[in-house]
Amino acid sequence: MFAIIVAAVVIVGILGAAGFLFHKTTANTTEPYATLNEADSVAGPAAVHALSGSWNAVLAAGIRLPAQVSLLLANLSSVENLTSGCTLTAVPGAPTSITVDATPNSVLAGHAAFWLVGLSNGAGSIALVSVDLGNPVALYSFAGSTCATELGDVVGFPSTESDSPALVAAANASGGAAFLAQYPSATQLLAGLGGISVDGFTSPPFWEVVDTSCPLPLLLNETGAEFNATLTGAPANVETHATGPVNCAAGLGSSLPGASLVTAPLLLLAALGFYSGD
Image (cartoon, rainbow, N blue to C red; front, side, top):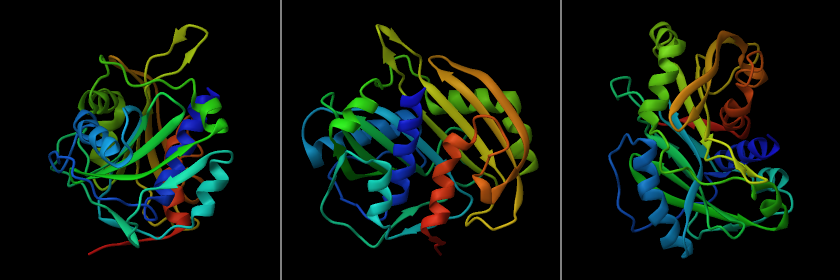
């Protein structure tokens, strides 16, 4: 479980630093509102182009926002604190911000404008690639003894991994659809990792689907509602789910079991500062 938490913390850090590290690649694009498989299909070539070697997806996060968000230049020290003991290597060509585009309600479930994919080279290094509107962007890599130790048990997504439409469909069937009908402008976060291998045992992929009515940017003393589901991914199967009120300023899900782990990236976006783009 600790490796799962570390993996989630990595996602938190990357979303916080996404405006700091940016690199255009020559990799092909996919459809603007990609599924997990489609995002992975372009993230891998982007990592190879930027860093060379062989890379396999071990982490992924898809975000459906009701409105476009531009993430301002982040302070890299915030990521260094989260990844102490790891060496962060920026891919050259940093802009002042990066855009997380909106996903219209008309877009099919399981498709998202923005994905963040973490890929491993099998030698203790992780590469982070964002895919926004189908365009892959290599952000940076990190490596070091601490990274290798804490993430060494995390494995790639298996060939039997369910694609994101199946994951979200399972979550929707357990209560997500009713929540989204009540809150059509909700933000949705799908985050997971390929699994954990310890002492010869390999766990199935682990996923969280979170729908939240909390506004972005977050407002103090704001109360919202949230649905979350914990799933395994090969095949998609809901293990637990819950719906209830949340204190938006306290972690976008602090009152619901399991939700705060994957809603933390949204809180960090607000904490580091971002603005809605026109």
